[in-house]
Amino acid sequence: MTTVAISGLPVATVINATDIIPFVQPGPPALGTTKSITKTKLFDSPTITTPTMTGPILGTVTSGNISACTSTSMVLTTPVLGTVTSGNISACTSTSMVMVTPVLGAATATSLTAAGNVLINNSSGKAGYTTGAGSGVVQATSRTTTVLINRPTGQITLFSAAGSATAATFTVSNNTVAATDVIILNQKTGTDLYDLMVTSVSLGQFNITFRTTGGTTVETPVFSFAVISGAVS
Image (cartoon, helix red, strand yellow):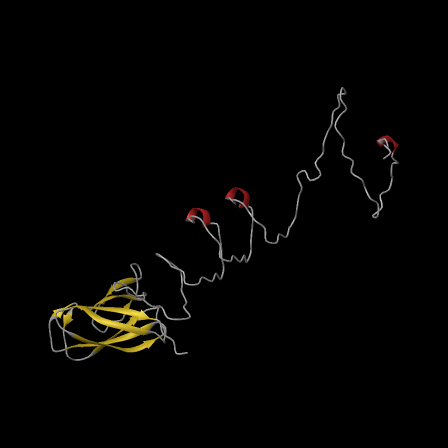
């Protein structure tokens, strides 16, 4: 093979799309001669925008090299997660997440809609309101005076008066009540025993009708109530 000096190659002033550009790698320096060789890497510090990787195999991925990644509608199939804490998942935001048979501990939410049954399988569990949901109100003037309590559950202390077997009715003004709701009512305290009935439910209020079973004690009995959301369709 004939040796051609680099300086003897023609110099192209225009490179066409069909041209073949040779890459010439310098050989080792000759013995007894000192040469300075500068080597430029072909792929030194490349920049790749929106790459598509099919079936990539990743090594250890840490927050240091994945923290800048942003993913919308990411689908993970059988992912293997390490220790997940609020500290390293707090920045994640998910809309319309679907979880199949999740096991939840103490969970809180602003609202919950279930397409199926909500069941309690623990003998000590119960459904209802928690601390902070309810309140109390004391009736003024008479036992037919309207009371105002805008809570879904609570207690009504009646005006001090003698018990009577004659039925009386008062209105509970409550902005949490819908016309389709159901009111649960019971007597909490009182010497006399009372028959209690919810005789009307409408938007923003319900009526309580009550009478004793014969007692005439002058006292301030307490009635408890809870509003259960209802619907007709």
